Length: 108
Length: 141
Image 1: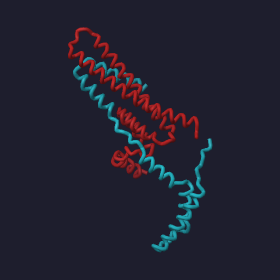
Image 2: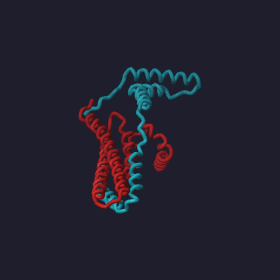
Image 3: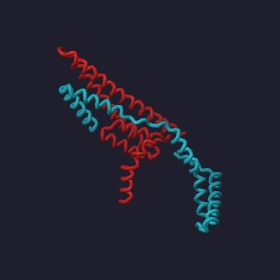
Image 4: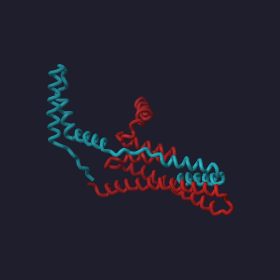
């Protein structure tokens, strides 16, 4: 199965132009010479595979994401069972056997 | 590479637990945590981690495998609780128990039912996610 590649030509061109602009601005402001065209290439690559859109989508997902509630329900209920069965030693013993059998079944 | 591994371990122990609830760490981290939780018999945490790992639209084969393991653990625990409920029923049928003891057994049975329902709810929730991911594998958009 060939995976669809979402390459964006306009995105790549925009990225390249922005890269050139950033390179020129950097040279003008700091006098630092970046390797010729490096930022343009990075910008083009950035725009071509639409990293900007991915970052945007990731941020939106993060903001909209329904928080996963901390789930400690089962552990609490297990503690209750443990506390209640202390008063019933025979039943507790058979519970322990059942749990051991369950663990062994899972290992098998 | 030893230094990088140490850094990753340090990250996992210190920083990661504080931000993992936000769901933006790599999927593999959540799968690793889900398996760790299963090892520690912490089914709540395992379900939470596998849910966080499965929030992306695309779900990997690795995610499906770990999800099935968590579902299987839920089923094993459900069967244990059902057997415990049977055991309580058998005890309740034995004649000659005081009223206090019978009340205790009934309360225990109620808590057992609650535990089973929580696990069944986890199982259903995960099965739903699993079927969504299987459907997306069967019919790629």
